[in-house]
Amino acid sequence: MGIYFFKKIVDELTKDKKILSNFYIQGLGQFIGRFLFFVFLMVSARVLGAREFGVFSFSLSICYLFYTVMSFGLDHLAVKWVAREDFERFSTIALTNLGTTFFGFFLIFVVSFFFDRHIFLTLNILGIGFCFFSVNTIIFSYFRGLETMKFESFLLVGQRLILLLTSFVFLSINKSAPAISISFSLSLFLSFVCIWVILYKKKINLFQNSGLAFKKEKIISILKEAFPLALVSGLGIIYYRIDSVMIAGYRQISDVGIYSGAYMVIEGIMLLVRVIMAATFSRLSQYGKLPDIKFYALYKKLLVLLIILSLILCSIMYVAGEFVFDLFLGKEYQSSVSVFYILLLSVIALYPGTMVTQALIAIDKQKIYMYIALTCTIVNILLNFVLIPQYGIQGAAWATVITDIILTVSCMTYCSVFFKKRIMSKCA
Image 1 (spheres, rainbow, N blue to C red):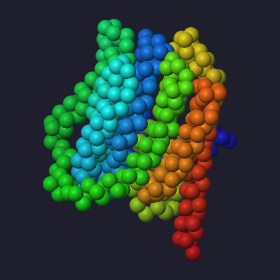
Image 2 (cartoon, rainbow, N blue to C red):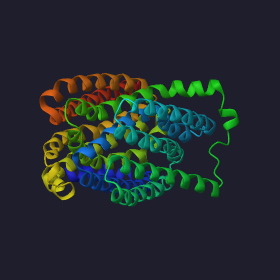
Image 3 (tube, one colour):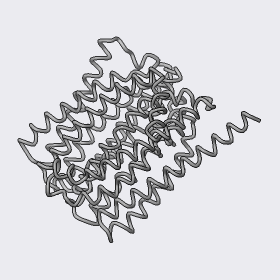
Image 4 (cartoon, rainbow, N blue to C red):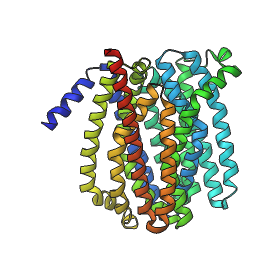
């Protein structure tokens, strides 16, 4: 009965040929790309060891925190306004992104002076890569808005393949965090070059309205609209990345490496929901302009689908967890397994939670999402302060799980009330 119900939802969703096509394209590209990234992290973890991998993971977490400033929530706005065919607004978004990207890197550079030379080098090398990552993401968002996913999928796989190949080269020269960071940034730079070569050859001008778009009042308008998304993104990254920073403060840097080993596998499990949302967010944005029964029907189908998928995947990984860590990471990361089992509870919350938060953005309720995320971030930081000193990396894992559950339940509750009122008002 359950399998039949699951199949029925999938069949209904895939009747939309555009969504189905984008799902296959994104699915293949994201799966191959993220698998290659997983291999890159696995190789890095094994070759570098827990301590040096901890330095890399710590620096990566710092860069992700400041990536919030670089992206400033502009990628989601780009998808939404391209989907609504406002290309002049996209030009303003893209130009604004150049400014926020530069400012984000400046902050990384300043912060790097507070650490030793080893982390200083790693941070700045990664920071350069994140600049290319930020600009690439805006361009990909343009094509997501058009529901054209081939461009992103092709380049994602290429970038990750270059990353993996160059990592072997740099690790053979120097087994250190700065060396592996060079391969990370180099691969993003080469994908950046490929993007612009392709755009030039296809005669695609993403800044055709830049003369009109680059006006102070338009940029201010974009920044105001993006601010809730930027804050939400920043808060989300804080409570996903702050644990690594706090573990480094309370424990040893090698503990960061062990914790990151567990989180790395969780990130792999989260692949499917990201593929599904990449394929459907543009459609949610279209329906979300005037959310009605059509939007709510898609929302409910996605919600049920993702809840079922999360339970299936977590059941499989609970059984296969120890085998996966033995096979890919080795004995040095055996203590990651207990953390991994705790973090699996986050997957159950985050599969539906990812869709619900995207739904809030699609119906222009990013401020509500911002308030919920702010509350969750405060809760997460407080929990980390209490749990990490006493329980170490397992305490950090429980802090993440509790926060993710609060986030998902809060967003789902708001959406339920919102649609109930809207549907009742339509029927009145």
